[in-house]
Amino acid sequence: MLYLIGTPIGNLGDISPRATEMLAAADIIACEDTRRTGLLLQQLGIEGKLFSYHEHNKVAKGRVLIEKMKEGATVALVSDAGMPSINDPGEDLVKLCIENNIDISVVPGPVAAITALVMSGLDTTRFHYEGFLPSEQSERRKRLEELKRIPETIIIYEAPHRLNKLVAELAENGFADCRAAFCRELTKKYEQVVRMTVGEAVDYYKENPPKGEFVICLEALPSVSDVQEYSDSDVDALILKLAADGKTTKEIASELASVTGRRKKEIYEHALNMLK
Ligand code: SAM
Image (cartoon, rainbow, N blue to C red; front, top):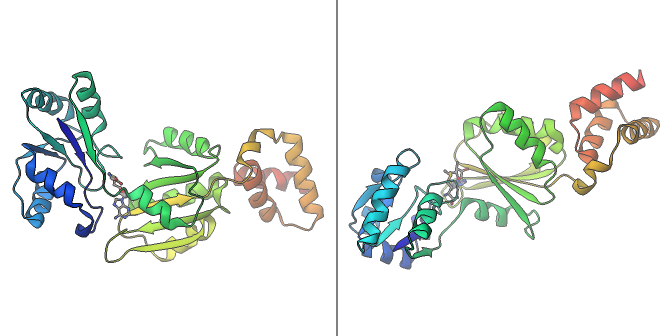
């Protein structure tokens, strides 16, 4: 049998009594980093048989774990933090267990995405979990384009040394005026949630270099469902109207990027040409 066990995302107090009990009872504890999970077990005062299972050995080690479970072993799967399978290994082992008719159960624990969402102050009715954006540039651009069409709160994971890049890309892709919550070091001593627009965050994080672990909750683009409905001539008409209202080219670009989902830079250059 396989147990997927949630572990804390920072605060040891968040381990549940049932998680501790299951970890103590398991024949094998499969984990990403045996040192890290070893420390957790030590803090919980339990001993366990650790087995390395991570992104780079999951194919071979997955087979071994399946054989052990077929022989009757109880395997507990944990990740370095939070829930296994959520941006961490787990999904493949679950699929293998299903294929091999091995029972699966879960001991739920904290997830950074949900912890951030409930603190964000943004719409929680519906949300889109994005996790990390791809690092490869063309895939990343494609994903950023796709995010514009998502009509619900978007949850993104990011490493601190890449946060400034991400914020700049979101601003360039029409999200500059969208509200966001930058949730840092959740459940830890230096927990902090900064709520501001993406445009404001560009300057904020230049002045306050990001440190620690981050989840970004991002408001969907307004009228995202209407994004496809703005033709080139609609955009031209809106540029002329906003210019007649006395808006600067920069203000026009920012406003229309939010409304149409088009790139701010593209609208800015087009408006400059139209209005000269
Ligand atoms: N399995 C985990 C979960 O259930 O949330 C996610 C693991 S993923 C490899 C690691 C990322 O989760 C970090 O880069 C960060 O974006 C986010 N994260 C994990 N712990 C966090 C915390 N305490 N505060 C903020 N973000 C956190």
